[in-house]
Image (cartoon, rainbow, N blue to C red; front, side):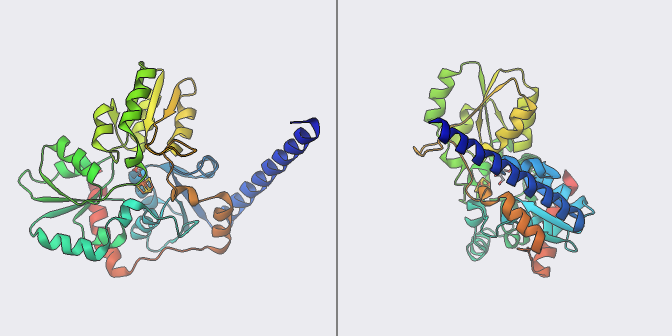
Length: 327
Ligand code: 13P
Ligand code: SF4
């Protein structure tokens, strides 16, 4: 790069930093004006995590959504997370930056097909992972997250017949941990199932002192290699507290931002995926739809807003509350 190009690039970078700074200032002002709170999942872009009032896993985020005094909840995550906030806080306005931020796992359980599936298994208790739509929550008896799924299933009598939905990988993991036969819905997270056990084994050979930590949405062959399995919050805590110098992280890469902050002297390596794409690590395309610009627009217009029909909400609230009471 010649000197003129260098100066131009530096000028561009400085202008971009200034733009981001003033956007953040505006977001802060709007938050105060509208008495809004920003809740963000760990898979959000770094700059969104940095402006959030609360960052967490699905359990922590639902607890926070239930407890906040704000008039407006801006949920920087995906659609089902906004719905969960609305189920818990019906009197608050819940907005998300982009209505297209869905979830492949939630989409793997359409309501009509799920209803037909339930009919095949009468007298079963339905435990659903929080990554599902409000309608599926309404059809369920109790909700769980990745941090309490084992606890939720263990809270049910040993002889209870149980359907676990929609994540088959989390379901298999929970069945093994609780030593129960669960009827599993065949859904999966398109991001976590892309993590490659074969490539991981090669990487583990390169980093013999590392710990492999994995989210339970990963496939069985990845979980079999893991030193630790847990929710995003549990993975973060493990990195902060464990003495190992290196960690290979089998979940969405967004969590690495907080891991680096919590353990600046440790090496954090994202787990490789099957496909040979440019990124070569696991990014959730839905979570990454959110941007600072969209958050600004969303707070300005208080849109797009999340609505859940009251009948659905009340049924879903029962199953979400049953989980929160256990936690
Ligand atoms: P947790 O943060 O609850 O572990 O969930 C991970 C996830 O996939 C959210 O979409
Ligand atoms: Fe859904 Fe997977 Fe993205 Fe989480 S990471 S929001 S489960 S697609």
